[in-house]
Structures are given as structure tokens and as C-alpha cells.
Length: 292
Image (cartoon, rainbow, N blue to C red; front, side, top):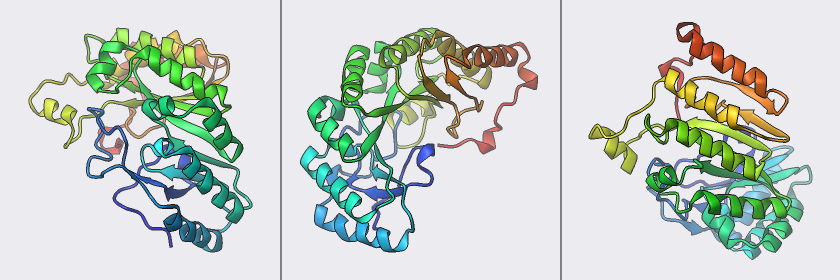
């Protein structure tokens, strides 16, 4: 059977994917808001440990169409190792259509375009990249390890390799004072990358993180649902995208919106304008239904 170490995390769109834990933890693991892998030491699992798990999945999981390579930064593993994993998946799962993984900007910097193109040809066609913000001061506060220019540079390496990018922006990451600056700068970075997908999450302090410790000391000004809607409105209004699917369907969001840009941009902005005009009537997700 397939063995897992610790708690598993995956994007909402990978709900029906087979999850294979090719790596444990996250190679960066310093983002101030993230608690997902703080109890794990990053390491790459042996291919000989994965082979029987893939064979088991072929026998017991039915027709597998999608595989998500966990944990938080599988792309940091050596390209040769990832190629072996992909070849093993292709050999055992004849119905496999795509393989995906999280990709940190550090991993994108390490992997060459040629390596990513080779892996893309073997089936690793989709990366999830947490941009979080396009504002350099906010990125520094979040300890992402890169500035906006570097984020754009490494993301476009993946584009050059033919990889589909699904990107995330962290609403509320700059607090009240920096909210508009964060929204506008984030839109600029997304525009420069032109990802196939962009989604939003809401920054949420959790225990065991530097952000959680700051919140416990009263040092974090968390935006309320109306303020977050205003920030989201500025973000969407700033998008100049040529074919991107937008979602705010992560459990942390107060508003669940969806559309394709640029086609639905005016509709999304109008929806947010209506929310801001009549917040009492807005379809905000109740607090008890939100999560990470």
C-alpha cells in the first residue's frame, strides 16, 4: 500500500488525484505564515520505496488519471530522480493524464529550462506556485526568499519549458496599511507571468508559525471580510490577463468567486462592487465554515 508520513496537504483541484509522497516536507520551510511542514525535515524518498507503492496503486486504485507529487516542494528533488518517478508512473498507470506538484521559487531557480522541459515531456505538466504577493516589502515580511522580479523570472522559466502554472495570491498579507499596494503589485506580477490559473487565499495566523506568534502578541492586523473584498477588487481590477482561470474557492476565502479572464473581469469587479456597496447582504462564508 501507499505509505504517508505526517499530514498531507494538496491544492483543492487535486482532490481526486492519487497522492504520492515523493519528498517529505519543504526545502525552504521558512515562510512566516505556513505551518504545513514545520514538523518535517525535508528529504527525498528512495525510488525503491516508491516503486511498490506505484505498483500497488495500479492494482488497487482503479483508473488513475492524475497524480500529485507531495510534499511541499517535490521539484527540488534532482531531475534524474523525478524522471525515474515519472517513468515508473507511466509504466504502471496507462490512464495517467497529468502529474503535478508544488514548486517553490527556489526550486524553479535550481531547475533548468531543459530539465523542466524533459520532465514535462514525461508527464510533470503542472506546477503550483505560491506567489503570495508582488510587493517586495510584503514578500520580505513573509520570508519568501525572493523579490517580485525573481518570482517573475523563475516562473517564466517554467513557461518556457511548457509547464502549466497555477499561482496563488495571499489576501491580507500586507495588513491594512499596505493592502492597496499589495493588491496592485500582485496584479502586476501575475500580469507579467500570465499563468493559466490564479487563485486567492486569505492570510490566517496559525500556531507554530512566526505569524501566529506575532498575532498572539497583537502585532498582526487581520483584515475583515469587507476589507478583504476591497483588496480583492483592486487585485482583479488590476489584472490584464489573456487567458487565465480565476478562483477564490480555497476554504480560507470569505467570498467564493470564479471566472475566466479577461472575459469575466467586468462581471467579477461588478460583483465585488455590489459586495462593497451592501456588505450586510454579501454572501460571505461564515467563520465556522472557513479553514485551511
